Image (cartoon, rainbow, N blue to C red; front, top):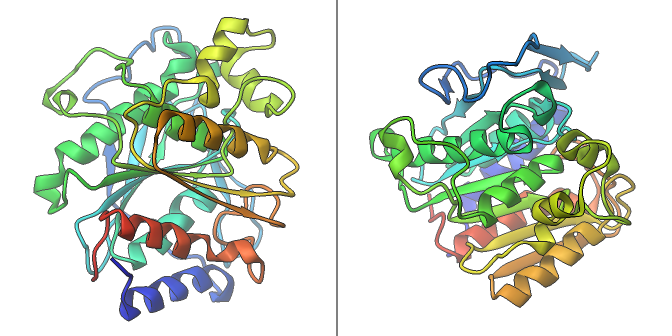
Length: 320
């Protein structure tokens, strides 16, 4: 199915908005707490949550959330929803989770195409959670289940729930997509529905935990200074069992100096070997962490259109 003209025009306008506006748009008012009580395994957690603003330009915001203790979803509902939903998992090297660049900014672009978006603020592995490196994955699994469990109430299709992860968020989204084992004990009825997405979009993902292509900062935050060979194996996406996983879309800039393009190339080989439908787009330039705002005038600026066209061919979205 092709995107129609109205959808294409709305998408183009959304991509341009962050660079043409003079005041940053307000945050969506709707949020959803992931857990009915405290997040699991927090008895030894003593951190104090904070959100830091890095931008000095009133036209856009550039925040990151650190020391999160109450993970949540921020909901961005489109004017003309088409039934599809998207869980967005921003990056931050597992040291923090960005709020805007790979979260709300990207969500606004997909919402312009009729997609209901849920931006995840997740717990971090170094903050003392009992689950350690699985703490972020607990939040991702719970988030996907909540989106799917709420679908009927929200007027959404529970069989059209995708995930989009960027950088370290791409690693987390990849873990969510590949792993079939639940990482926490069920807490309510939402945990009876599947947690794997129907489609997975990975932007410049941190895929491998192994040298020489690892993003060292993400590995250190996730697995510690001297991780075991078993831990590296278990958390490297290209070494996981991808059989029966949903289709995957990969995007990477060849000149990425932070997360080498080999992360996506190795993962693509693993997906092909496992028979997972996959599409990959490599761009000569773009660097790392560009989201939708930092690539104006560059070839990679078309990535949202490419991702939506791919998703439409797979039946995730229809004409608006």
